[in-house]
Length: 432
Image (tube, rainbow, N blue to C red; front, side, top):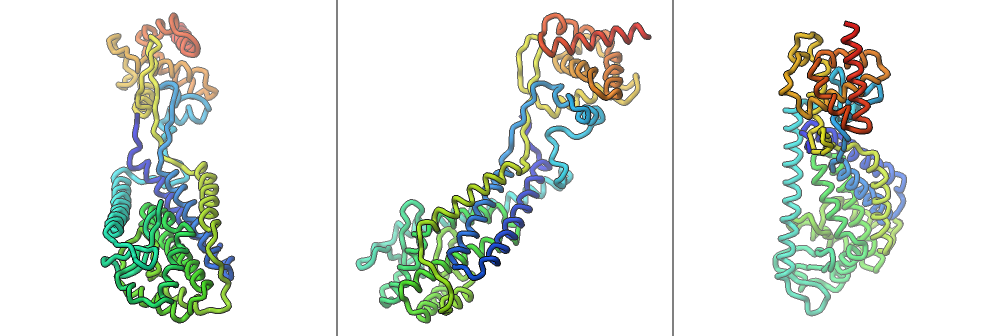
């Protein structure tokens, strides 16, 4: 099994960059087109873009497995593939020619820096989730409202994916009835819309694209749209606009450093949210079940469709077939280089690759390389056929000793290749 090196992983990283910018541009155009729509419509569009970006990003990073039936397969037809293999061209494991390929030292640095950034973001996300779980476990249940009260926080928030719960600060004991109504309506809207799991998805996307300012913009706009959609629910419930806007501003002054939960204290887009709350002519809509399902359905369908065309790093597995018919895994890259050295050498009969090896050096690799030459003897390119013929002659009696048992005992294509190579050896000797 041959794992992809750093240079092979850089190509998928370029896919991440392209996908991040593409999703952000699509989101910008879509929200511009829906400029007069509700916050809920903007949130559905932006959340769908986030889900699509997450699926495409994971598809670009998950390696694919390439299997080759034998060592000679990389040198097989079509003609262009044979010619490239003979001159040391690209292999089936090479990165896509449409993507930039960095030199190995630079590529390793790029990959390491990206991994460190992603690990830092994921570690922060896990740490925040663990702290909030601990806060929730130590909180007490309110005597008057279906919420938990904690002395460790200053703002209300929703925590939990399976059983989301509203947690409020201890200062809530002095809240007025209007403040309680606004807070409960806002946080309940987060639960009804399914914003808690979407926050996790957004943070994972941000961890993979921490270096991309376009993705940061996309995540920020998504957060603003979700908070605005919940603000619309509060306004539709009859809360006083000016009082609710003042409540948001007071919460925004509180300390808040957790990223894994939605909270009405989010400072992102606060000015825009306050302006929207005070705008009496703005279109608003309450929370519906489709707000939870629509972004996931659209995102999964779009992401899976795009995942089929995403380039991915390759892990190749070749099989070396010995004379007895047994198969064993063999790194295809190493076999390709060994076969190429045997075929072309340095162009001179005195080159080390074209010297006649002793019978003691007849191995399975040698036999497979000679069978690969036998396959190339039937290539459509005359240069390929002549090069393979010269290489067989350079092996001389060693090639004959290695191929005769295969021609007698093997079956199928291996037997045909061996007999073709032996016939070519005999013809060359007669001509000389």
